[in-house]
Length: 268
Image (tube, rainbow, N blue to C red):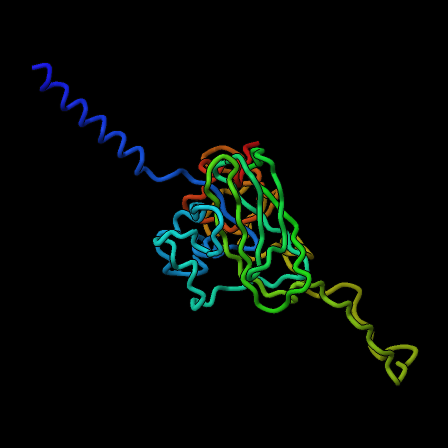
C-alpha cells in the first residue's frame, strides 16, 4: 500500500518539475524609441506580426547572436526585411530608450550596424532602472540602416535583441527661414483703406494654443486610453489613480498604467 501511494507522488513531482522548466520567462524589456520592430508590431503600426505583438519585451536568446529575433522561431517575422518596416528619420546622434518590465542584473549594452559595433555601455552586473537611455553616435553612416540593440544579462547566458530601422540624415534641425527680400516698390505713405481696430467677428471660447499637441495626445489628468501618444511628464488617471508618464510611448491594450507601473508610469 505504501508503494502505491509513493508512485503518484513521484509522478506528480516529475510533472511539476517539467512545468517549471517549460514555463515561459516573465516579461523583460525592449527599445521603445526610436521604435524597434517589436514596438511597431505592438503599437499596430505593422500588422500581422504574430505573437510578438503581444509581448514585445520577450525577444530573449543566447548571447552572441546578430539577428533581430534572438533565434526564436515564433518571432522570425522580426528578421523579415521584406515587410518594409517604417524607418525613423534621425540625425547623426540618437538617444535609444529602453522600457524594462523585469530589471535583470546587466552586464552590458551593445549597438551594431551591419557587422560594426558602434556603441558599448558597461553596467558591471548592476540592476538598471525601469527605463534606460543611451545616446549613440551614428557618425559615418547615412541613408536607411537597420541597427541591432542588445541587452546582455549579467547573471545568465542570455541577452535581449531589438532591431531598429533608421533613416540616417533625415532628422537634423530644420534650416532657419530665409528673410523675405525688400520689395522693389515702396508703398504709399498712407494706405487707401485702414483696417478696423478690431475684427468684426471674434471666435468664441478660449484662444487656441500657439503650439498644439500632436494628434492623439491628451491634456494632463485625462483618463488613460489605448492608441494615445504620451510624452514624458504627461499625467493620466486610471482606475481612480493618477500617474505620470516616465517614458514617451504610444499606448496599446495591455500597457495600462496599473500593469506597467514603474516601467512606463509612476503613481503620484
